[in-house]
Image (cartoon, rainbow, N blue to C red; front, side, top):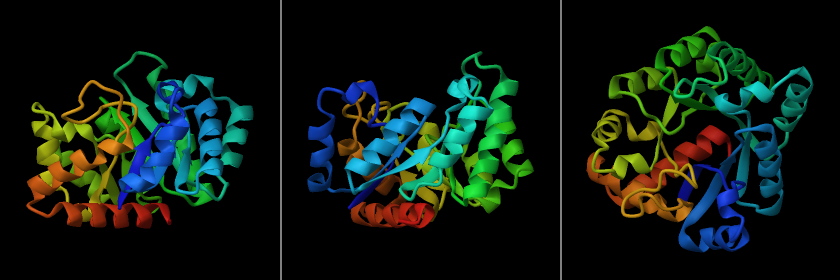
Length: 254
């Protein structure tokens, strides 16, 4: 069965049919889901989902674009949530320079604080990095992220950079972009990175793969991603599903 390593089922896009969709996942071959917090509010919603569905685990964290909401008081609340049993990672955290706000220095401060939080609670990290490769890598090195482990989610840089993250002990999250006709760079990443360091994800409701590009994404589309990886790696679909499932279970201790 398939392991969905990154989704946002607390998103408003699922308000109309969330229960129906989530209840259908296991019968459609999805064994586990990591629902990932991106703000204080979505971290709270993620925890609710983990309490409602045995196969859903969570990550607690604040996305770089939401770091302006953080202060010492609510950071203490976040730290407490990270200690919950079904919260298996700190994330998604990192840097996003695509947007001008929040200021880069604010993003860096809270990225560093959340890396140290992961060290305190002894859990891996889910990294979001967009147009910020060098600063992300440098901060991870400075804070010895290799001792934490984790995944670079929705990876978007070069194959060479991917291998640098792999050397640091990190996995690479591969999603729908690898199926796009203009997804040559992601195909090169999949070709370069050992299958033992690949996780598959949808980032639902975003980035649906072909043939559903542009529509609301869900874990039901994971098979398209796995089949594309299998084609690139010259492996069977079943091998890709089994190995990436094992990779995720090992990383998140499930």
